[in-house]
Image (cartoon, rainbow, N blue to C red):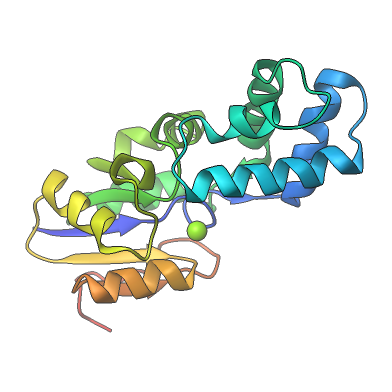
Amino acid sequence: MDALVFDLDGTLLRLERAYRDVLADAIADVRGDAPDGWLAAYDDAFFAGFDAFEPAPVRRAFDRIDGCSDPEPYAAALLERELESLAPPANVHADLERLAESFELGVLTDGVRDWQLEKLRAHDLEPYVDAIVASYDVSAHKPALAPYRELEERLPADRYAMIGDSDADIEGARNAGWAAYRYDGGGFGELPEAIGER
Ligand SMILES: [Mg+2]
């Protein structure tokens, strides 16, 4: 059987608001306001930690903001705000159910496994997925080969195709010898019936 492997952020789930607004709301949930200095400091600290595969990069980023004495409530608020701001494409459950008749289905996502699983569960997507690899599992973000090879280990299949919204998704898939389909919105009803059709 062949495998279809979906990116998560921007593909299976898309933010319906600017991320900066999501972050600002989370900070304001805890402290009542969202100073510009906090927003910039969070972004810098998060991406530095994320690129270095530091554990718990969200909590650590809040911890590095001057004036943040306890990162836990901020991390919890950000997860809650992210979950409520994400939405899947229309008919995603019906489309995945139909695709699952012909393909193994996987998710290959940049991020921390538990955080990404929360997103899948909040939108009832986990039951459709046979294997999930998060970049933190292998300490390498897309387009590195390691997460693609890890997905092949966890989800044996004859051929693989990646469906993702970013250059990294496509570049990594091609380097791994997979087919690649650019996701640019809409449903998954137009995906090919067999890998290699286009
Ligand atoms: Mg994406």
